[in-house]
Amino acid sequence: MFTISSSPIETAAVVARVEDATCGGLVIFEGRVRNHHRGRDVMRLEYEAYEALAKAEGSRIVTDAFAKFPIHAAACVHRTGLLEIGEIAVVVAVSAAHREAAFDACRHIIDELKATVPIWKREFYADGTDEWTGCDHCAKHAH
Image (cartoon, rainbow, N blue to C red; front, side, top):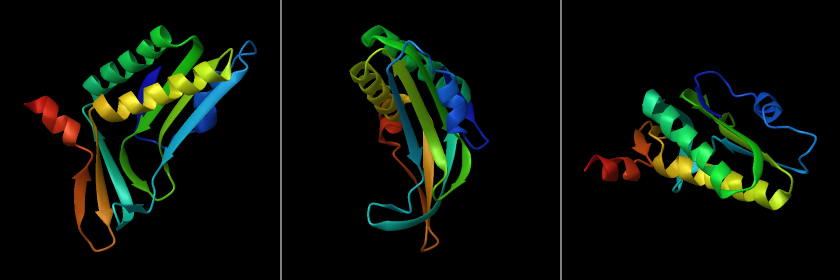
């Protein structure tokens, strides 16, 4: 249901894990590396994960989606390592009998993933500097 990959993510392979003829709703979210953040030009990203904990927490989030929404299937893959502009960093795919549940569950999964899973993002900027971003929740949990 939740995996981490050091290789490029194939969206079609993630979708194949959730497709079903009984489902009229299929929602796919791709998070891609963009070329800017907070007014700065971004050249590439690097993702690192505390893999064992990330897998456990990511799996908990996907399992929780089944309890909260009437969905048929859900899958999520997050990338680690160096990624270039335009590359896929994360894919969430959800199928359900109806679109509303699929949309709601997909949003729940990506929002919870970003908020709680120990995967960290390092941005490399055009000016030659770099910084870890989005780690506020990590610091909060460390105290």
